[in-house]
Amino acid sequence: MSGRATNLLRSLAVAAVAAVSLWLSASAGAQPALPISDRDAHMGVATCSGSTCHGAVAAMPGIGIMQNEFVTWQRRDKHAEAYKVLLNERSKRIARNLGLESAHTAAMCLDCHADNVASNRRHTTFQISDGVTCEACHGGAGRWIGSHITAGATHAANIQNGMYPTDDPVARARLCISCHFGDQTRLVTHRIMGAGHPRMSFELDTFTALQPAHFEVDADYRARKRSYSGVQTWAIGQAIALDSMLAVATDPQKSRDGIFPELVLFDCHSCHSPMSQLNWAPRASTGLGPGIPKFNDSNSLMLGIIAARVDPALGTQFRERMLALHRATVQSHDAMQNEAKALRPVLQQLIQKFAGHSFAAADLIALVEGVLTDGMAGNYVDYAGAEQATMALGTILNSMRQTGAVDQAKFQAMNRALDKVFSAVDNDEKYAPETFAAALRDFQTAAR
Ligand code: HEC
Ligand code: HEC
Ligand code: HEC
Ligand code: HEC
Image (cartoon, rainbow, N blue to C red; front, top):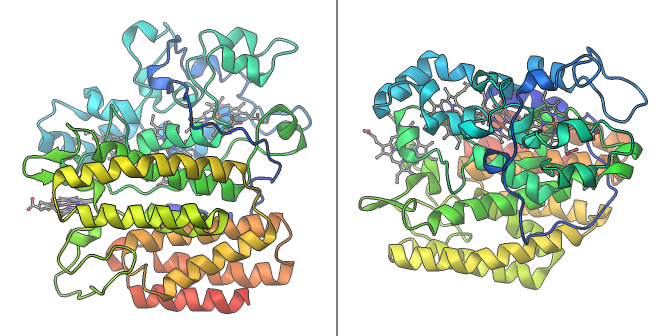
């Protein structure tokens, strides 16, 4: 996690973000096309940024949406910089190392760093240099640009007209993760990492707030749209993140590179850590011996905890399948692919369960206990797991406050203890499991 992300995250637990009303319709079935492959004309940001549209200087009270979304995006949202970073020294070096002519003209980079739709869907006002624009998330506005501002416009009608359903956590997770990890068409492969691309991490609820969010889930929002609690968003995001890795693991082309599997599927630090750092210990969650690169299990550790609470039988099935996947990685490529295939339907079931579960105070307390118990059992010796556990605690604590599961005094004590947990994962290269474990123990004391 970058220092900037960590600093923002520290203030996150005290900011009211989401609310808890439920509209239980997350469907894991037919999914809408992502904006990069929708069928609509993309107009470019200039079309959205009028001062009476989304370009107000400050949030407008009392009219539903904030109307300053453009200003928030332009000034505070890194997506507005996403194209520009392709012109910097780091990108030049990555491009050189990969033998690309330049980063800002390569589809390999533009597919995630801009709204790189096919040329026949670029309206005359479209500019590739705008970066990850409104339409890269909300879908090409060709059909809805006019209708979404007419009297009587509804969110459902906008979606009919090609707006992407970012309010649905399954659809939102697929969208964000398609760039923050990859999908069928784009992926930061280990070769791109090797050329110098930064390591990526993602958690849906945390990153929604970090972006920063240019929407507020209040009564009027809930009347217009589906809304889910932060913990549901987190849970569903974990399932889609793991599913996206499994999609790559089962893809005949993407899953291997010569005699090696695609290494971004594995825990970076199982190879990238100093040889003097003798951290290896048996792990119940993988069952693997020493000296074996480990399939990235940071999302599955969280899913095991959530599933155990929401549906224990399905949780056991999930954990057994996950162990089988870890075992298969030391058998053969075919065995790994088969286990990855078998795990995907279990994830679909979990998503349905999470979408239909209203997380009550007792659930939230149990989830915190689950994270802490796993921590004490040594499951976060590796950085990636510790990083996910930290974002999980932030998300759960936020929901605890919103549902009144903690009083103000305890919330503040826990929030202070959370600061130390965040500091312990500030820098993956300086990560020390003992420091993290100590911070978790303090958090546990504050939670009691
Ligand atoms: C699958 C999507 C994807 C692809 C493909 C991709 N990137 Fe990225 N890139 C990202 C995301 C997401 C981040 C932000 C990671 C974070 O901060 O968590 C990022 C971050 C970066 C950064 C660091 C930006 C900063 O603010 O410091 C650079 C530089 C970069 N990418 C260059 C490239 C180049 C050059 C290519 C093409 C060779 C490329 N990327 C391909 C998604 C992608
Ligand atoms: C990285 C993805 C992303 C980008 C880029 C983005 N948005 Fe959003 N936007 C979201 C998400 C997620 C939501 C919340 C879910 C929802 O309400 O659909 C949202 C919500 C909104 C809402 C609805 C607020 C409400 O109360 O209903 C508006 C309006 C909006 N965005 C406008 C914009 C504009 C204008 C831009 C460009 C200047 C933009 N967005 C860029 C992801 C994005
Ligand atoms: C089209 C690709 C794309 C999509 C879709 C996308 N992102 Fe990003 N995101 C990026 C890139 C590229 C960066 C890095 C930009 C930079 O560093 O300048 C980034 C950066 C971020 C950052 C800043 C991270 C940091 O280290 O400061 C957050 C937060 C974020 N994205 C959240 C989201 C969320 C939430 C969604 C879904 C609603 C989303 N993104 C969808 C490409 C995308
Ligand atoms: C199975 C072991 C393994 C895993 C897992 C792995 N890597 Fe690597 N990585 C390597 C090897 C081997 C190299 C090549 C070193 C060389 O070129 O000398 C490398 C090179 C790199 C480099 C370039 C370092 C340099 O010297 O220029 C980066 C950056 C990198 N990996 C990032 C990652 C990230 C991020 C992940 C996780 C998403 C990851 N790696 C997962 C083995 C691994």
